[in-house]
View 1 (cartoon, rainbow, N blue to C red):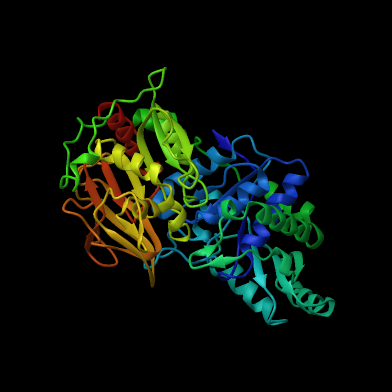
View 2 (cartoon, rainbow, N blue to C red):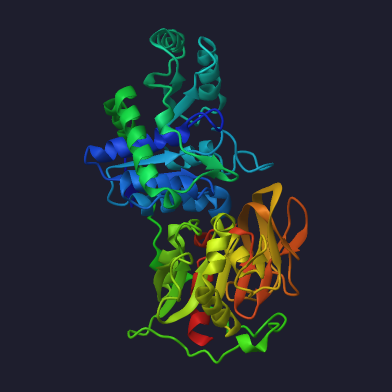
Length: 480
């Protein structure tokens, strides 16, 4: 199979240069021309893809060589870009920045090479003139396998400033494909973990994306950028397919026994019927809404391929789990911003506790861990785990190499997975009697909780790297 989707990688010398503004603006501008635009983001970030989806009307997808492995970058890209006229890939950090201590692994440069895609460098020109040529020359010549094929100048102050920048870059051999003036209206609000997600500011986010598109239309040569994208090299290989990888993953072992300490209150252990949809599929409820915005699209696709009916619910609004729920996935997000509202929804908190104490499989990552705790910043949560959670001044951030410590609804002990941590909260204690993961770096430790069917941890993982996780989880839904 040959993959020939026109594509561009939008990179920068460093974070804060304007990659998200330019990438999102390009996506929206090309989509307004009637093109089917496939949005992608290098790295583990969940928030930028939300803006990409708003700009294109398609699911934003991540390309993370650390979490998924380099061999899956092109197949996952082809899966997301299937049937599209153009793919725009937003980079992460600086062009050559990747996983700490791992060389180029997970960098924008590595993904550009794996995709054989031209790179457009977004440069914050606000405090320089002629020096911009030296900067661009350095990035363009650092790795001859990375094709830096154009520059978009951002935060340009005046016509005279633009003239000086263009004159300097004439000597670099890298063409200027856009020049954007400073514009406050395209700024997006941020807080302790980055941009505020789209789900929390829907109307304002729509306006911001519209402003980005208009700025890009005024300041960029869209025809030249599309011509550049069409010149990307062909890729060989098959697109990733959830049904195929689930079918080829090892069959799940026999159901795991109940693990971990018994729940503190036996009244929370009702006899739970085995819910089942009319066609025999099991319902897996996935938390969504403003408090739980972090998810990879491939997770739902893998669960569906494994035989589940995936139904989204909003813990801020819904007082009951979806009818027929046999398993629960609670991903990341910002429950700390909505702790009073989550706590006030007592009927749902009780429903979640009853499901978990009844032995149903529950996969909780980061925000999900907080929601299952006894309390978050003093606000009662679901009480599934006897832990207390609170905000912290310390940012925990980075890739993790992990191994499953305990058999769980997700994996057998010894299963290796790579993950990512990104939070300003702490839970006490940090691990249960049956921990979820043993983390190898940056320090050796155990973390998380396996309790009955619950697997709860701070670690964000990408199931495309281990599709057997989804198959095992759905099988546990059938047998619990």
